[in-house]
Amino acid sequence: MLLVEQGKIRLWDKVKEYIPEFKPYASDVDRTAEGKSEPEDACLWHLLTHTSGLPPYTDAEEVAQKSGKPVSTESLVGYIAQLEKSDPPGKAFHYSCLGFISLAFIIEKVTGQTVADFAAENIFLPLKMRHTFFAPSPEFRNLCVPTEVLDGKPLVGIVHDPLARLQGGISGNAGLFSTAEDLAIFAQMMLNKGEFKGKRILSPLAVERMTSVYPEVAFAGRGLGWDLDSSYSTNGGDLFGPDSFGHTGYTGTSIWIDPETETFVIFLTNRVHPNDEGAVASMRSRVANIVASSIIE
Image (cartoon, rainbow, N blue to C red):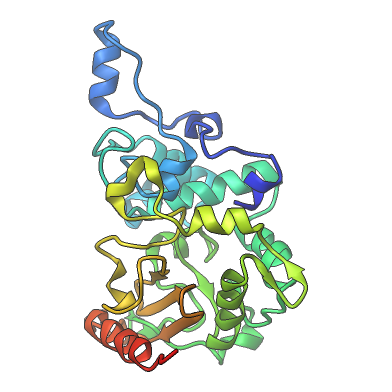
């Protein structure tokens, strides 16, 4: 969205403009071969709303066998681009880590910076979010919560997600470490329509578009990146209103922001330690309800 504001990309740009290998939905290809119609191409907004037709995930070991270990984001995105699409763009919602890995590569292609460097320069450093970064250095690792135990050793300061780990911890779908204090700054910036303590990160209109259900795919219940009313939004509980928005993380993290009451709920748990068998979905909802019910005015 920062690049959209700067006029460097458009949401309606086709994904294949940045990733030429990006394969269309199979039946669209068949129809073209028969001379009936051109295939419909996914656009950047399809990636942002998880309606591109990309599958949710792919096997990291298979990627490593074909592309090496570690793997560059460019190589991984080339692999992702060739995967069969489950649906034509804009027809179905499937939360896809692969779409956001692709978006991180597009940021890198347009700016020459990794998503980690771009986010640090344009978001984290201006907001003084001093404990928010990808691939934390050794000096910060003792502050990181251990996640799953693999081969007898817990992952500490190392991203849990296999595809992000394959890329050295810098990925569009996972790998960002932070604290409740830093996330509170980010949440307040969003409540302030893109500004915090004199530092403007996003324009008010960009925040509005990101945090509204995208009209082209209203059935998905998603904004641009943010979740409002999808099957993943139960972390917002039952009481916050229809303008509230947020997101969850696989390892147990959650943020929910409500402009109506100027409230945000940051919930950082660790459901994957030690064996990826914990569950926090119900607890997140109940905590959000307790917070919402405490608001009297």
